[in-house]
Image (cartoon, rainbow, N blue to C red; front, side):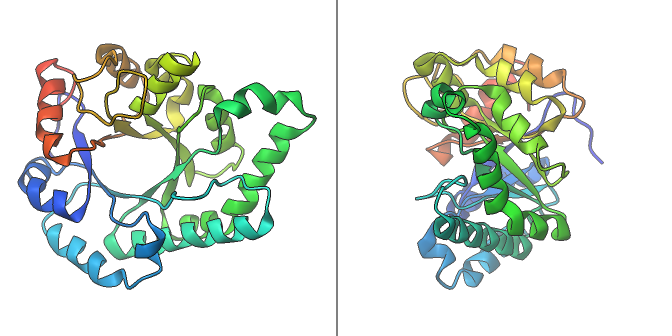
Length: 274
């Protein structure tokens, strides 16, 4: 196995991006997050031919594979049991895709909102009830994930408290539920809502951190710019990552997938990753 002196970057790509960056991906057998299967239109259609195309595009790839799970139009903590059933079905569909493309990790969006930060403790038992609703939503998907050796990683979206999502993941008492960080989301929360800086999110996650979306922002919006285009303090982020017992998957998730090599080159020039 090839050793690396610095953390190895991977990327979040669609099938089109795979075609563009296949050589870059295979050169060092980088980790991959597949992003073609997030919408209801794809999941409710005949997605197997698309999965077959992805597998063919990945011929020769020996890096780890993950999938961005479905997320459009729902949250995993709905009060409505009928909606929770739909969300569970969507996540089960995502896990079917994981089996089809050889993915052993699936990104699931956090339920925590900015409103939650200010109000969960303003109502009796609201926090515990939210956690219970998430457990109900994930009951079947988690059982499926455990059976197939896939890990669900909870990604911060509006999360202002870096510890809340970590506690939610731990509440399942399962190795199949862990933590993801999106650096741009964390930076948005820091600049626009008063959350801690990105490296604090890494420290809060600790050993539960298994996946990181690497993207830059100025902190006003969810830009998904390449590293260097925004104002994230990357040296602090990578110092926090280096202190973890195990390096999580580092996935460049850029709005313009053509900029993946340039984003990687920026972090490499800083001596932070390769």
